[in-house]
Amino acid sequence: MNLTRNDFPDGFQFGVATSAYQIEGRDFGGCGPCHWDSFAATPGNVVRAEDGAVACDHYHRLDEDLDLVARLGADVYRFSTSWARVIPEGRGAPNPEGLDFYDRLVDGLLARGIKPAATLYHWELPQPLADLGGWRNRDIGDWFADFTETVMARIGDRVWSAAPINEPWCVGWLSHFDGHHAPGLRDIRATARAMHHILLAHGRSIEVMRGLGMGNLGAVCNFEWAEPADDSADSAAAAETYDAIYNRFFLGGLFRGEYPAPVLAGLEPHLPEGWQDDFATIGAPLDWLGLNFYTRKLITKGDGPWPHYAEVEGPLPKTQMGWEIEPAALTRFLIRAARDYTGDLPLYVTENGMASANPFDDPDRIGYLSDHLEAVRAAIAEGAPVAGYYVWSLMDNYEWSLGYEKRFGLVHVDFETLARTPKASYHALASWWRTED
Ligand code: FCB
Image 1 (cartoon, rainbow, N blue to C red):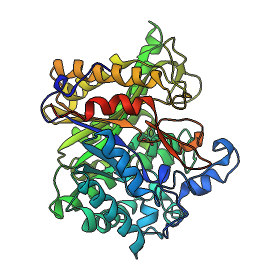
Image 2 (image 1 turned 90 degrees about the horizontal axis):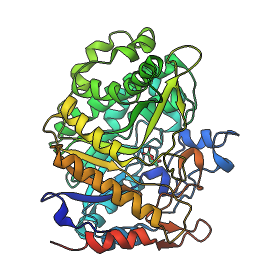
Image 3 (image 1 turned 45 degrees about the vertical axis):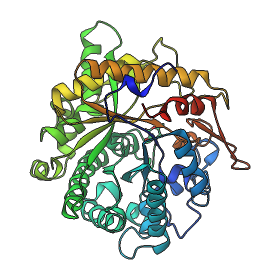
């Protein structure tokens, strides 16, 4: 990599990201069951029906893993807190061991000079709440506010930044319309309610954290650049709908107090009554926006009922996930987010990275990261206020419905022995992240 810290603005933050269920091991420390456990136990949902029972055993290897973050020279470590670990029943009594774990995590980061960036929810909904309808139930706003209070009363005084929910599109659409993630529903009404309640819960959580006196609060959304697959008017309309569902629903809700018309065309009849009244809560002012960015999509007209779009396989080189590599799409998205929604608000690329089958020597990942860091520089040069960039992920981990097969780590994990081995990409980043100038 030819980049140095000097190529980025003063104070630019470099980091790595992980999430609780993907690394910790839910069999340990009094963690309760979550909807990913039951989803994974249902045949056909997850490759080899793998789950997060042990994952990377991070729960027992916390210090070893934080040392890896420190040796990488990362400024920030983005992690998530497991609701099922902190409150096994979802509501009510906290699990002291769970809170102690996140306390040790935050102190361990601070002791190593690393900024803790917390995300409250990265997908492990406690099973008792899933049984009550999960994200379809409006009460989740209250449940999530209480969970926020429980976690942040303990660690909120020491985290550097915090965000309520990782990737509302995945929690809402991917999980309730596409059925690819827990709870695996394919239902338009469930989708509409979940999408709205996620944003409502986000707003409630922000209110709670402000009430605790916390600052540096943001939202973390995943975005994709949607392009029409050809010059036809049908493809243009389909790409616009895709963009509205994937990107503008969340940007619009958070920053404009409105949902885009192409989404309302399908979801409005299914939204909960009085949904417009919730924008006052949803739009609580934020200190930054986090963008998780991996790829672009080519879109054309699809058969069947709304939303009338279909993805087309693109011609660009692809990662192990089959995702096209298009760094310029990141540049375009950062510029667009600032221009149309967030203005001067700092933007952070809160996840970016690639799955690669190369176990240790991963020049493809080094190339991907270099090109996307260049794409971030290009956006900054155009005036987008990008303030940080975090790699997904510190180490190979549980890649949801793809089990342990897809490897996103800078550090290789042997899932038999759980041994960690830094890859070439880890060393490449460390060689310039560790320099001070
Ligand atoms: C994101 C998720 C993260 C991981 C990466 C590859 O959508 O936030 O947990 O699965 O994709």
